[in-house]
Image 1 (cartoon, rainbow, N blue to C red):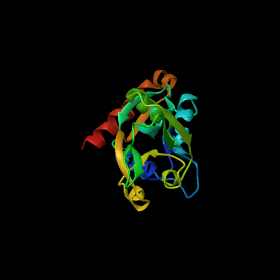
Image 2 (tube, helix red, strand yellow; image 1 turned 90 degrees about the horizontal axis):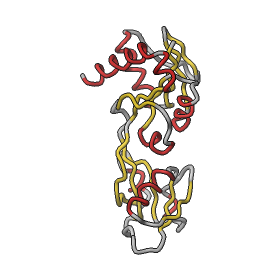
Image 3 (cartoon, rainbow, N blue to C red; image 1 turned 60 degrees about the vertical axis):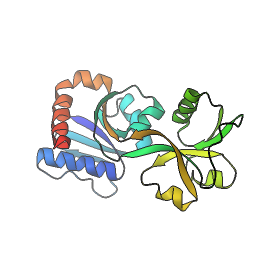
Image 4 (cartoon, rainbow, N blue to C red; image 1 turned 135 degrees about the vertical axis):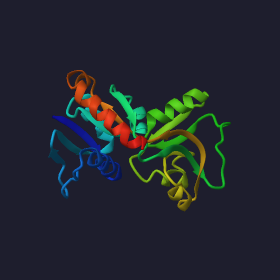
Length: 204
């Protein structure tokens, strides 16, 4: 049996739709259930940020998670396939009437992605003070907590509604199929078979 960690929300639903197409029957979680067993699969409904931990620790054989999460957590997993689901961008946001001022001795950046942020500015040779937040990131520059933010942007609506604009794009992200390295050895045939079936679906 393969255990599959899925992120709560739309990505899980879209992934289960792919499974439904492959196996010809409905794959769907019952309301509020966190585990679903169907055929040769056990699905786990997991918080997006926790999926790398479930995979690296072997609690799940494979999982689906955004590239931004993989880059942020720098997790030791196998990246098997870009599913193309949940496309978004990691961007720097600033107040609408301002610009990103690289002449400052240090920029204050509010984000829930400190590793991605630090790596980006390190590559530019820019000193930053990273302020770790867990939500309402857009509020930080509006109240003077930070000069800018680094956050996920899908349509840009949330930023615009809060008087912010995208200053720079750091990376593009989408959901990836990943695997535990030990599982890929012990369950190689099952994982590769599923990989090829999923790849066939998303290519059509």
